[in-house]
Image: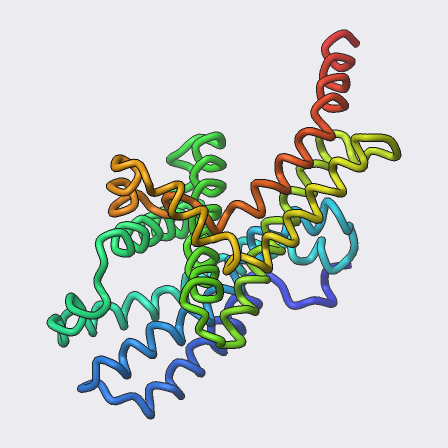
Length: 289
């Protein structure tokens, strides 16, 4: 059934080839003596990478929520889609190295920020570990639980970094670029699907009553918050960063104080509060069966 789709390493080769071709094409008009041109290549390579990490984080949720031939194909090829993300990020890493080495004054004066560096370095460490353990030789060196923890925490971190960047671009810097809105909404949708799939596993959607209204209301509130960050972000950031310890954490703790993730947290609370009783009863029934 899956034979009609391109799969596995062939899929990886096609996508990686397309990414590399576009990178080389863009390089033809890049001035390596210009740090601005190299910075633009960093951003360009990220725009190739981001859709793949968003797709990877949504794949299992898509299959749970909408089982079909297509979502089964996506699930089957999730590993190779993740490796395509690694290819695009390798291009970004190369451009970061070039601009930091050849134009260090520009890099440390205009680009470098400690928290961004910590977030980016952590992301590359996760990516390297996940890429290596995608191959049998390295995967056999760790347990199944360790592998799952690494890949789950890694893909969430790698999703959170670009998602938060595009959130800030849209609502704080208000860049007005169409791709900022596109990637932000794709990132929101990808994780929202995971939350809804998690809710389905915990007990599904309440058929009626107050719990249904609570879930519907909080999901709607999440959607409203997701498109109105420019309204509530200034007041929330001021409140969260008012304590001195919180302001200091912002300088080095990745994503602190987590404003971009508030809409998704609201959705998760809605799903959790309306499925926890069902999940508990199901667990109790299994335990006493």
